[in-house]
Each structure stands twice: as C-alpha cells, then as structure tokens.
Length: 191
Ligand SMILES: Cc1cc2nc3c(=O)[nH]c(=O)nc-3n(C[C@H](O)[C@H](O)[C@H](O)COP(=O)(O)O)c2cc1C
Image (cartoon, protein in one colour):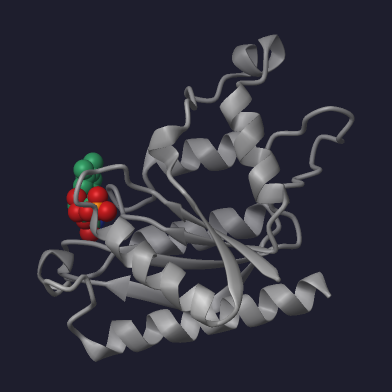
C-alpha cells in the first residue's frame, strides 16, 4: 500500500490548516493510501543547532526522520507566515534533512526522490500563495518531486462549514485532484 505522511505547519488550536489536512487525509485514504498524520506539537524539536546535532541528535528529530524515510510521499499543509513558511515547519524539515549514522552529507533519506504535495489555508485573500512558492522551492532543494497541483484556501476563517467541509467547490475539488495525483505518483515512483 502506498504510504503517505501528512505534516501540518501549525499547532494552533482550531488551525484551518489542520482542518484542511483532515479533509486531504480522507481523500488520500479514499485513493488507496495508508495515511500517517504527523502532529508536530507532539514532537520535542529544538531549533536546529550544530552543537545539539554533534552532541546528541534529538530523539524526536531522529524519529521524525525515520518515519518520513518510511513513506512513499509527503503532503505538507501549512499556513504562510510573513510571506514564507512557519519556523515550526522549516525546523522540522531542517532536522529531518540531516545525515545520521553512516550517511553522506547529502543523503536526504527522508526526502530524496519522494513525491510531495502542498496545500495552504490562510485568512488572507491570497490563500498563502507566497508561502507555498517558498515551500515548493525548499522541497525541490531537498530533492523531492513536487506535483504541479496545489491547494489554496483563501479567507479560511469563512471557508469551512459546520461539518468541517470546504464551502467552495473549487478548493474542494482541488483537494481531491491533488490527493489523487499524489497517491498515483507516489505509487509509480515506489514501483
Ligand atoms: C506570525 C504570523 C505571520 C503571518 N503572516 C501571514 C502572511 O504572510 N500571509 C497570510 O496570508 N497570513 C499570515 N498570517 C495569518 C495566518 O494566515 C493565520 O494566522 C492562519 O489562521 C494560520 O493558519 P492556522 O489557522 O492553520 O494556524 C500570519 C500569522 C502569524 C501568526
């Protein structure tokens, strides 16, 4: 079964991106993926530092890296902070990108050659587009294949109904389209 992890770049109570990730996870499962939802709030990830890394690689950073390395693909669902991605998410990516054990300096075992998809919900009318543009570039840098489809949910504070579903048909259909492509490409790359 195709394994997909879902990472949310917000730990806020009532996070719109977590709500979006829940919908996306359901669509990934509907398209045949085994989904692992990763909650960064449950991980003890200090800000990356060379001294910490050389002293003792933080156990949760290693656990994150190993979990991601076992996936066929990763869905990133993140808010935009000041035109880019939140430090929370960048820090998690930075730790998971680091070599461990006998790996060479750019082994990138958690990410290299895997497929990614990106989504963002934002309270602004632009839906976190600048953050996703940065995220796409970061994921390319760590040698992920980022699918062309992406999802923006603008005005997220008005975007979800009482039932947790997206009110607008366009982002809702894009969630499904993106999930379908992510599973299909992940399965093909893993074959
Ligand atoms: C530090 C900070 C910076 C933000 N910068 C942006 C921004 O550049 N663009 C944007 O659309 N929203 C920005 N926002 C607002 C977020 O879209 C909003 O807080 C959103 O609810 C965050 O996602 P969440 O609900 O998943 O936590 C910012 C919020 C914070 C806390």
